[in-house]
Image 1 (cartoon, rainbow, N blue to C red):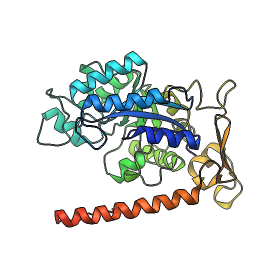
Image 2 (cartoon, one colour):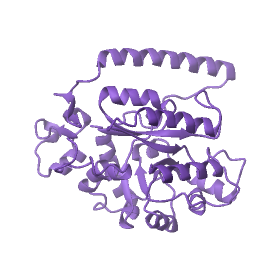
Image 3 (cartoon, rainbow, N blue to C red):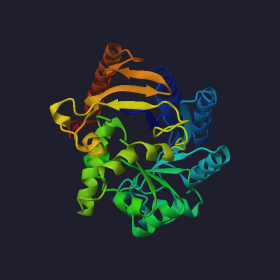
Length: 345
């Protein structure tokens, strides 16, 4: 079902090549943390490597690039300022994890440097207010998670025309908190759906996210009329395109837009029959297994439930190989640390 991904991780060149070869749309992050890694050693290094990839793929219409500071607790004020200037100057989106938990906000407000979730700033405030103080916030800012928001901070989001990405399954699995989606929408904020990464989501299933978002939103507001099927469908489609500044190209079926199409079969099996309201059936009754065909930019990527551009058996073989490597690495690490790790929670 996914036509477009917004990715934030190391080695964006590899991701770009995979997206190009598979045909999927992708908004890839020029990622940054203020810690050395195997990918890069300094903030300048992270930026330079990411910009090289953006330059390499600048002519590919299905790819775009964002500046992606990981979060306030891994990126310093100076690096935020640098990326903010670059993003404004180049007309790029900024994609970041913000207000993932209440602990992050409380530690930052108290400037509790002993807490690893405290923002890397010398100013005692919530991360969102600190980003506002620095002039980072604007209509190019894509804030992911946002599970801990006050009324004042929702007003800040609306005033600066932020885009908020709600990741309900991840928030529930990690017990991070509940994004105030209905309140954000009421304030006029564009809210789209996301999955977060595989470690905190597993299935990366956008149809599942629509249903989870609808049900969680009703529970959080104690109102069964909130977050309707139509609203959640828009959050999974056109609102996501708006967040990534490509709604003029995709996100809805309109004359002049790219031929990005998903065919979802409903009414053809017991689980999706009978159909009284197509939008409700898609959100509440269908699953990724009901997706039969997908086109991106007129290129068919899925035909009758079978991948066209990807050799699935070969891919699964590679995945199993990497799984064995990761399992071996995990066992070695646990043995060296003398700790136990729960990988099934």
